[in-house]
Image (cartoon, rainbow, N blue to C red; front, top):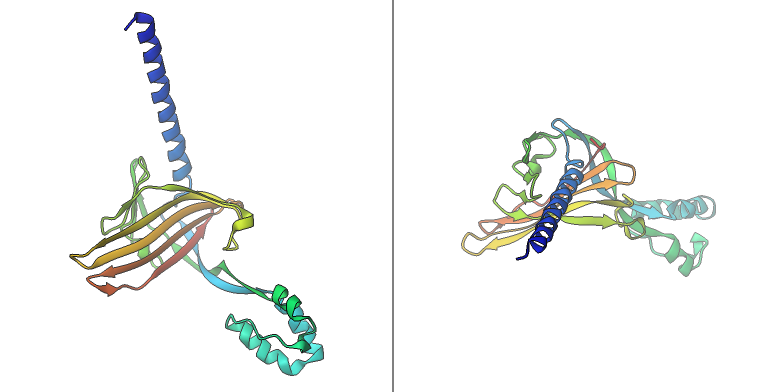
Length: 232
């Protein structure tokens, strides 16, 4: 290889390695910025059913057909759309557009203190009352790989959700997700789980953990954990 070509090749290689190193540093910085600190206070969230347009119908019934109000409110409380009645004061088409039930994530008023152990290369969740499901989950801060206590490993993937397609009520958000799927026909163990760490437009962070698993052929209690905490 001619000297000039060798120098150009070496310079290009250095540039590529430098670019990769900077990309890894940026990736690690963006991921670790979402992680909780040890003792981090987090608010517990849960799915709630909200109904748009209900207040309008209830106000009308209070004056036009108060005998229907209790039945209407009872259906709403259990997340059911009350059957249409012309005494609601709207057409069937208007009623269908007006009364819409949506499932949204909302804070419950409960909080937990997260227990995490962190080194330069690894973060591990410990025992924490109210967030026991996270115990034993670890995150490699260099590769981004997450490992469950059973040994299942997943690589991170970028998550970007715009406000116009949001179905949780959280609004626009971005961050990282991990998907775990596996089964062993010899032990009759199986798992389908997902973890996500996302920053909301408000600056808060949302940590979610959903899991369905089978151990020795027996279905285990489903995990649905949703936490939010201020940006560290």
